[in-house]
Image 1 (cartoon, one colour):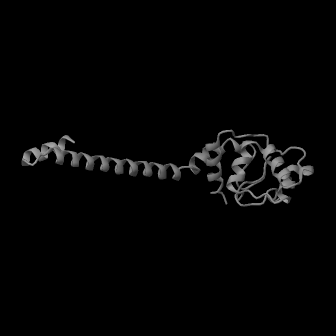
Image 2 (image 1 turned 180 degrees about the vertical axis):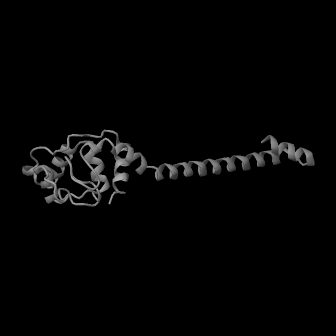
Image 3 (image 1 turned 90 degrees about the vertical axis):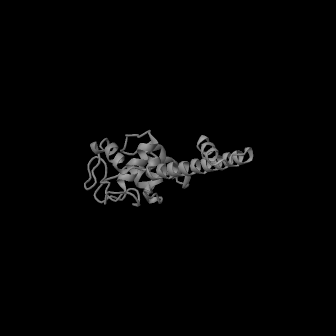
Length: 163
């Protein structure tokens, strides 16, 4: 604001009306810049909503039981995103996990994110919601739970890179 006043004083054109008009212009400009900055930070936040590199670091916890390319205590996870549950070749699934796949569970990003929070509860709810509560018995082999939602999203972003 002071910059505008000095500029107009130097030219000898400073009037109260002109000062008010310039002040309004500056306010509008600052509002526009504020909105643009906020929009920019929102798009940056969206872009980093799922971070595969961070997910790779979190996935190290999963490597006790999983690998991308071979079955271990848990199934191979290469290509898991988009795969029907309970169908990794050569892996023997628990009845709970197998039944979920038979009932149509596909490992979408959202399903994996929810599964990682509480595997048994997720599968039992899935089967119950499909009208197959009688098949929602037992437990899955996976006992690990990942409580942090951002970490779950990051792990899914990493899993999506595994083929």
